[in-house]
Length: 100
Image 1 (tube, rainbow, N blue to C red):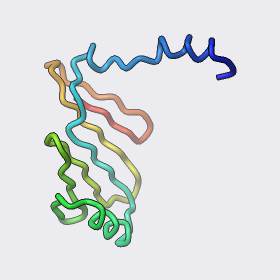
Image 2: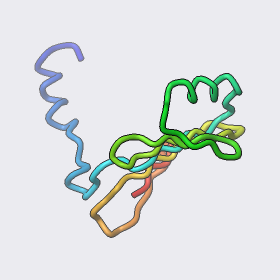
Image 3: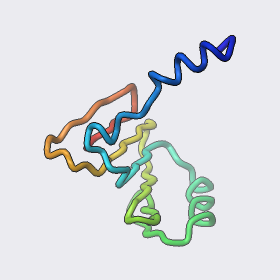
Image 4: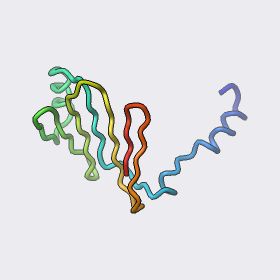
């Protein structure tokens, strides 16, 4: 942004509406891609609470959240949110899928 007035104008419209739509937070993020053995070694070094599976690893985070790294030929990210809204919905933006 070129000036402070433009920044202030944009900020009033750049407000998250997750609470208004009943989204309480993120439950799980699954990252798929052509990870190398070295990538998985680094992931295992960084995170302590983990569970390996056939072609990936599940990382257990605070507040019952999960981060999943899974080997695949192409990159893809799936984000699953927790929602008090009973309507199930999802949106896909390029290779990112967000679902409630």
